[in-house]
Length: 224
Image 1 (cartoon, rainbow, N blue to C red):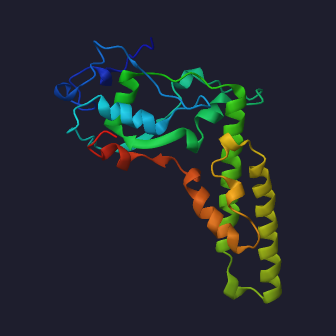
Image 2: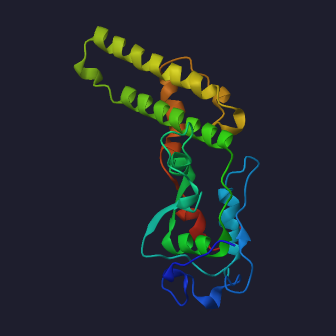
Image 3: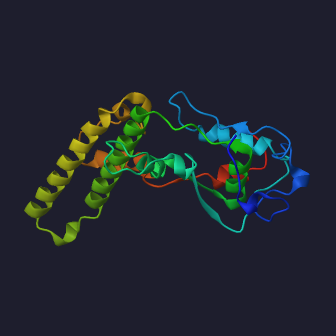
C-alpha cells in the first residue's frame, strides 16, 4: 500500500471533502485501484466517475483554486535519467499526462486511490511521440494562420504558405505512423489536401497541446 504522509490528508481538513459526505472512508476502507485503459494508461473518465461515487451525490468540489493533477504518480517512481532513451519523467510531465482539477478533488484522488503502475517503455515512447507531433502540428498551423497576409507580396506569401504546408505535411505523415491506439485523433479521418485543411486539423489537436480541463466534468453533481 502506498504510504501517504502529507498532513493535508489528515481530517478534518479544508483541503478534503468533509467526513460527513464520505461514502468511501480512506481510513477504514481499502484504497481504490486507479482504473486503467487497454494500454495501461489512466482512464480519466472512469477515474472521475469513481471519485464522484466515493462521496455523497450532493457534494460539490468547490475549491479555492484548481491545479494540475499528474495522472502518473508519485513523482519518485519516474526517473529523470538523461542517458535513458525514453525518459519516464518526461512522459509523466506531458500535457496529455495531466488534468486540471479542483484542488480538493486532486487531494482526494491521492488519498483514496492506489497509484497507477508505471507503463511499459513502449507505451511511454508512443505517448511522448504522440504529444510531440500534436504540438508540432498545432504550432505550424498556428503560424500559418498568423502570417501577415496583407503585408506580404503575393510571391512572398505564396512561398511562405507553401513552406508551412510542407512542414505540416511532414509532421502529419509522422503522426500517421504512430500506432492507432496511441494516435490522439484518427488522422486517417482528416485528409490533408490543401493548406485550408491545416486549420481544421488544428482545431482537433489543439486540446492536446494543453492539460485536459476536467473541472466541468468533476463539478457536475451527478455521478455518471
